[in-house]
Amino acid sequence: MTDKDFDLFPSPCYIMEEELLRKNLELIKSVADRAGVEIILAFKSFAMWRSFPIFREYVEHSTASSVYEARLALEEFGSKAHTYSPAYTEAGFPEIMRCSSHITFNSLAQFRRFYPMIQADGQGISCGIRVNPEYSEVETELYNPCAPGTRFGVMAEQLSDVLPQGIDGFHCHCHCESSSYELERTLEHLEAKFSRWFPQLKWLNLGGRTFDDTQGLRCGTSDSPASRIERALSSFAHYSGAGICIYLADGSADL
Image (cartoon, rainbow, N blue to C red; front, top):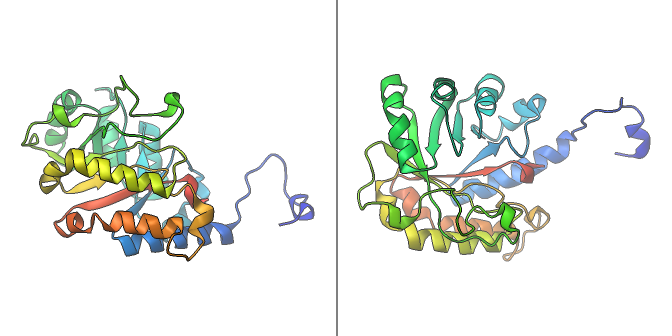
């Protein structure tokens, strides 16, 4: 688009170039398909609901971190959300359940508090626990979810050998504007810390911000970010083969 083209639009307004959006979505989906994982859209990075019909051609589900994002998933995106929030309220939780297919809890105590409501609801919601791999390469401590003293997630030492009944998955999020190299190293630490529980899981959500070196995603070389991401995720193929669905939640990389 040229400066002259922009003169045709009112200001202020949001402008989306559909051709470029589709190109990014096709690239990301191709990497995910070859690696055997599923991409879900992260609303906190991108929530332009008028573009959702385009996204639905490539992405089936979305993430939510609040009741309003969960409603956006159900009412505008057209599918129930994979929801995680550091805290839930009893007053707001019924609406979270109405709009969610997956709900991740920040602690075991939180899971025990709300799981009876999920059982009573009877909608087959899949529950997970956020885990802390105690490893992150995010340099700014303010944005580092694995910083010392963090309250995000459960550490391996806090889990018993047998997971509580009702926990189907683990959620891990420790990236912020990260590269494919960081994803490789993170997966190594996650596997070292938590792989003994993987046989008990149905799904593993690796969070987002893993496609942020997207310029290299367009390169077809064996050492391009796309190739490194594909190889790193393929190393989890034996877990997928055992019945674990692996999710990646991205939004900004789609743009």
